Image 1 (tube, rainbow, N blue to C red):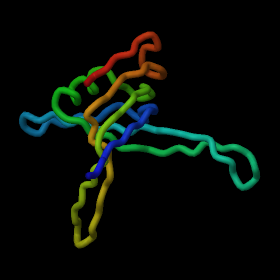
Image 2 (spheres, rainbow, N blue to C red):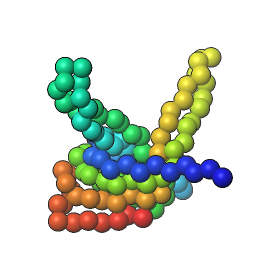
Image 3 (tube, one colour):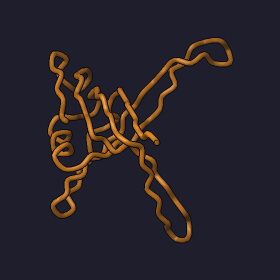
Image 4 (cartoon, one colour):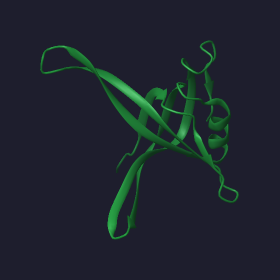
Length: 118
């Protein structure tokens, strides 16, 4: 048995990017998470990690409608990696394929509103 599940809570770095190839809707956005770490000098510093999120169809449409740069979100999904080759160079990109996005408010959103997309 194996489990592939990622949970991220953070803020969008920019407005979502939406593509519509054929009948499919694809929404991509990045989410920043941070935590405080003690540096070599003993002072605490913020360590920021960026997570690429991709969602499809109805969830993508709802994210396009409600999310903006700075929005705080809860994202749940599976970690996936796309692999391709360009001019003989192998490349890959890891992302979270979201199956749940919950809008938590905060920057860019309505603080009094908590909404679950799917």
